[in-house]
Image (cartoon, rainbow, N blue to C red; front, side):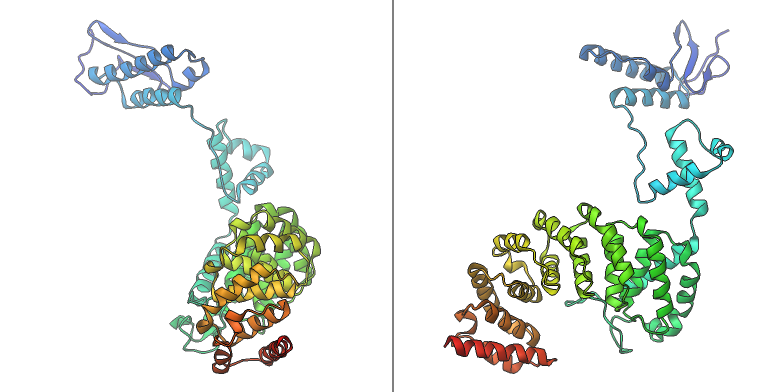
Length: 451
């Protein structure tokens, strides 16, 4: 006897499933049978003619609706039919795994014994990825993760993002607004994290090591005792894990060691060799940071600087004001000739001067003057823009600007003329070093010669 089923109720023995794919059930004189699984249907070719595809999809939808109306379709079969329609309409793409640890996870999986690997890996791609993730997570150091997050967060707290935030700010006063209250006693607050970091550094992967190094540098405590041993250990681990550094890791490590003033010539040699072939992967900010770090350390790397100049020349539109000024400053600081780069900047920067901050504008003029690349059109634009900002420039910026125009031998009457307030602004400002006063003296001699 044929069982009577209520709408949307589960079928009894008259409905059977095989792998959630084949359903055979009866309701009165009508029957729906042999609905094959999506995997089985995908093995067969779907008709290519548009009208045939339309009829085939309509047929699938009709089957699904009839099954729901008669109440003989189980939840598993409904999902199978819906999945079948989706696959025919849009084939499912392979599982994609993104992230820096993809290669490492695959390597971990391949290093497993055959017996263990066979017990973990099933024929599907998704299962392989899950097994690789399982092996990776089993070998992942929780201590390394916690320490990386700690130093990164503390670095963000201390590195106060104020109006003139640049390099890491030194917290020399207890009342510094960037210093959290719990870090008033800095050495006591960071003693145990520092000891644990030294003990667990060998467990860090390349990305964790770079991020930790960057976070510690942002705190601004330098590399003197008792931080010296930690920076020595960071250098050793960075050299051993250099192959795993990506573009951001290279920039972070270079910036960190430069900011704390830790001299590591071997590490910078390794960074230069590793970074040069990877420069197309660098963002504009990464290129700028690496150039700035090598120039600040006065570490000669002509091959790397040539590659940075070539890469920057073709991607100037990606550079913001800070990245552009820092890159040109680096070439001027190292006195490394890059005429093509400076000519390309000259053509584009005149229409972008209003986007630059005051310090970036002065740095740009100083870099062009230092490299003896002084096009008249550029310095006329610099003169006009600087004249509008005189009331905001500090003593160091005023002296650098005066020296740059003296070297360029550009009169700049709108900036230095009788109607200008440049001399009065210089008298009102304080100069922290004698170099600024020497620059102003050279500028005054230049003005007298021109007169």
